[in-house]
Length: 302
Image (cartoon, rainbow, N blue to C red; front, side):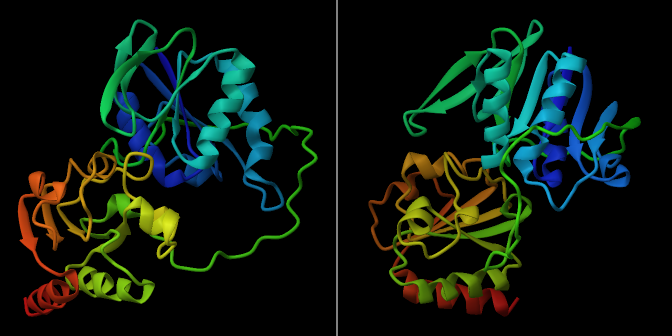
């Protein structure tokens, strides 16, 4: 079995390599990076295109497509980012196949794959399998990353895709970027937090435990208190932290899907009947505005 990996975020290749390792076979990768960075992933061969600041991500599609047609992999694994999904969908159309989206688990099935896929908002799991060349997207946090060096690093030329879209300017996005997938401790806030300023309570606790702040979907896409990059759940991030604080989160299945691999879940909610108390390891029934300062003070003292 020949497996080809691709991600628009080079930090995700460790997870993709781990996923590919469960299938067996020869693992290669397409990466937009210089030679040194392309060599820092544990694959048999890393094909790299030199990055060009004047180009959009979409402009690299033609190079990726040509590599796929030349190498003819059996399986293509892509990070389930917005750009990754774009690349997978466009490639599938060219190959006249489909994409197995957001697989949480998978295994070899002949020269293809089959895997577990959430549906009905995470209320159920179904098994899907590839037909023809397999293309699958994998959410961040689904596999523990592996590290190493490429056996061979090969430069391939950039191929112009003929796109009329051109980059004319780049602006830094406001706010601090964060990689929640690698965080050992996470404080996640839900709709129990009523004002954006009150996020500071969660940030103080996260600082005290050496962690990061995440949120449920309504906090990111509804109220907009936090960036969508911090959204945890079935269509957001999947995490495996050592300690996970669920603060003001009811505990609907759509959110639990993203945290059920956490080692310890601690819930804070004023509703004693909240579903989160059925899945947490420790539960605190109380007003988060009173509980969080107490917890922060306690951890700062250690």
